[in-house]
Image (tube, rainbow, N blue to C red):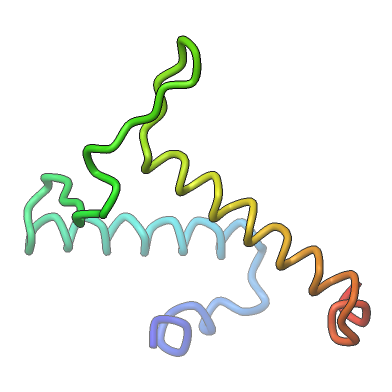
Length: 92
């Protein structure tokens, strides 16, 4: 909706205008959300909230380990997609 109403009107203008417009839209949307729901940060509960693991002298939260594992898994999936699928090799 924003693309149709706002962004498409500046097609043909310098790219700097588009960058500044999208940054401005982001600031306005973030400010509007802060006015409606408040500025405090809210988080969703995870199944890993209190769990921690110790590896020698290093203490790691289960949340960070799950983020690391998910990132590695998605990286492998993307590697496989771009390396072995017909669409992935065409995109390269």
